[in-house]
Length: 269
Image (tube, rainbow, N blue to C red; front, side):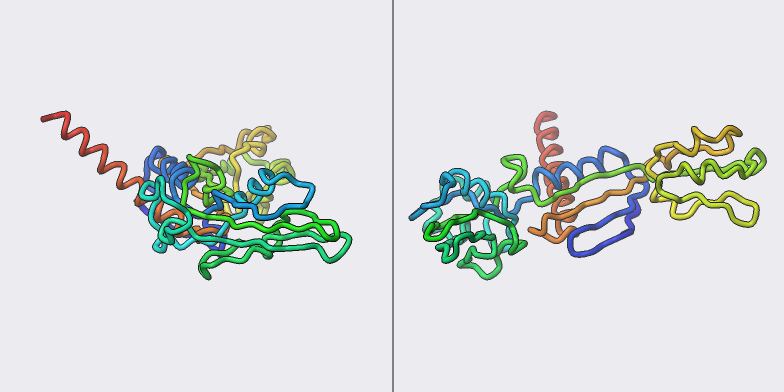
């Protein structure tokens, strides 16, 4: 298997994976969604709430705020089942919200949350939680723990986890009359005419829509894909770096495979 990074920044990574079966690539994609753990607020203790929102609504909104996560800092979810959030710092961390509107109209944001752990904070300070009128108040303690997306989507570390085939565009210049219809039809503008020849720029941008193939009356264009080659795109919520998500998904897949082999060996005895 060959692996190449096509694009990468703080939130997004695009990988070219060659000589790999589709089930393997799809397993990495699915595990990134459902099994890679992240922190999210799971329990909320309200001390005061005079806003127009019910406690449950605010708690739900808090749970959906992505939190920066250090996986080495906390125990995995399965080791924290039944743990008391008050006195288990390896399983839980606390965030506090204590706000009162001083103006007629005041928006409370995720940046108003205060964390007892400097490594844990909202990914963005500008996620709205509630709107308070003058004199209204919210005071609460929130407890965040590691969880997985298969338990609740608030623990999923990705906003995008997708793969596609690596496109292949073949042009038969003996048939092509350079009419330019395919150039006009391509939604990604990857076809162009140069030096009396039809050419392709950045074939990886092709979406396999086959619009160019359908509009070509001369049947000079054939759009297909390369066998066992895929582009995997992972976009993080910000809780974990995208490369960490891919790495953790691969480790989880390896552990599951080892466990499966172990059970098969036991059946053979």
